[in-house]
Amino acid sequence: MIISRARNYIFVHAPKTGGTSLSLALEAKAARDDILIGDTPKARARRRRLAGLTPAGRLWKHSRLADIEGVLSLAEIRAMFVFTIVRNPFDRIVSYYHWLRSQRFGHPSVTLARTLPFAEFVCHPEIAASMAASAYPAYVTIRGEELCDLWIRFEDLPAGMAALEARLGIRLPPLPHANRSARPADYRTAYDAGAR
Image (tube, rainbow, N blue to C red; front, side, top):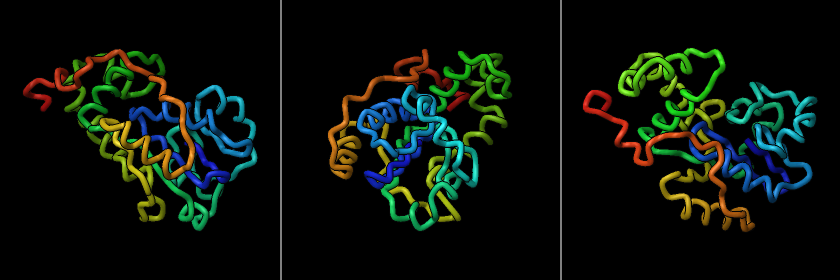
């Protein structure tokens, strides 16, 4: 997540959407007082700045708008340009599965991904519940109000980036491919008849 008072925007980083790549590009143009929340080098370097903040929820790279109330007032959040990246959910879960398989931390989803083939993982009730709880609107909703001004589609990044640059009035560097998971290039090949 990035909160930029200087440019009047909030970037909400939904998981497995290419958000780390966009964070890196935005951070290349970050103002001195921008609040960078995440695990990129610049965000880690500024982490101490988060210490005095009083958020309603957890401050981490995948914070939701509702989490940052207290860092900003509801009126400030409503007045800012809010954007996020969204991804085809079938592609997103393939990326999520392969990312989880490479992880070593203790979490039920990691255990499921490391022990189940994809077709069983995607149909598992815990995974279905997790994906439902992390639907894109949940990331940009605060007090029941959805506040996203721009949904950038992962599948059409050039158009989304052009719209973002026009709105922010800046030219961003090309997006690096950060946080890549080892997975099939075409997500559709991961799905058999049962997983569909």
